[in-house]
Every structure is written in structure tokens, then in C-alpha cells.
Image (cartoon, rainbow, N blue to C red):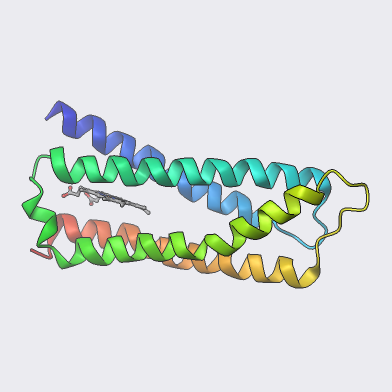
Length: 148
Ligand code: HEM
């Protein structure tokens, strides 16, 4: 019971953290982004990677060591839809991360100005991540109650 409580608490804190990180990226990526914003964005994107990895590891630990037992999830369609949504968010974050790395390389130059089309593309990917991410808590609540 205590292990389940610790894992569930960590899961929720990390998931809220991940939501905050994606929201921060959406706010920072703008056409008038400065070099300082480019550096900040690069740090936030590193936190994104770390938080997503921890969500994955704690999530797997919940499946293996949670109260219901792994069978409750492995045969649960809502669980697999949630995993699919999580994977899609991960895939949608690849292009932004590549662009953020490019911006970071130029962020120290005085003339740093991101191209409007790159900003628009990255914003599109970030908004798509927010859209798919929003489905995950719904699928989580479903998998905890139905689906098996
Ligand atoms: C690979 C990633 C993940 C795994 C393996 C995973 C696994 C789990 C497990 C095993 C539970 C316990 C469900 C139960 O009580 O039966 C859970 C609950 C939950 N997860 Fe995840 N999770 C992952 C990612 C996420 C993400 C990214 C979010 C949010 C965007 C999320 C939101 C939730 C919520 C809100 C609950 C509580 C559901 C409820 O009790 O109503 N999870 N997750």
C-alpha cells in the first residue's frame, strides 16, 4: 500500500511538472524570441527530457508494483491507448528539440533572430503535443476504472 502511495504521488507530481514544462515552451517560443529566451528554452527542453523519462520509469513501476498488479494493465485497452498517446507526444517533441538545439547554437550571437517559419513550425508541434497530452488524463481515468 505504501509503495503504491509513493509511486502514485510521484506520478502525479511528475505529470503536472511535464504539463507545466510544455506550457512554458509554448509561452517562450515566439517570433520575437531573444538569445536569452533561446538559452532558457534549451534548459527547459532538457528538463522536459528528464521529466518524461521519469514519468515513463515511475509509470512502469506503477504497472509492476502497483496495488492492482500488472495483469490489470497489460490486458487493458485504455492503458494501451494511453501508452500510444504518450508515445505520440514524444514523437511530436522530436522536431522541436532538434530546432531548439539549433537555436541554442546561435543564441549567444547578438544578431540572434529565429526564422518566423521555424517558430511557426515549432509552435504547431507544441500545440499538437498539448492537444494529445490532454487526452492522457482522460485515458488514465478510464484505464483505472474500465478497459479490462
Ligand atoms: C509511460 C507512461 C505512463 C505509464 C506506464 C503510466 C501508468 C499508470 C498507472 C499504472 C496508473 C495507475 C492506474 C490505477 O489506479 O489503476 C496511472 C494513473 C494515472 N496516470 Fe499514468 N502512466 C504514464 C503516463 C502518464 C501521463 C503522461 C499522464 C498525464 C498526462 C498520466 C496520468 C495519470 C493519471 C491522472 C492517473 C490517475 C488515474 C485515476 O486514478 O483516475 N500518466 N498511470
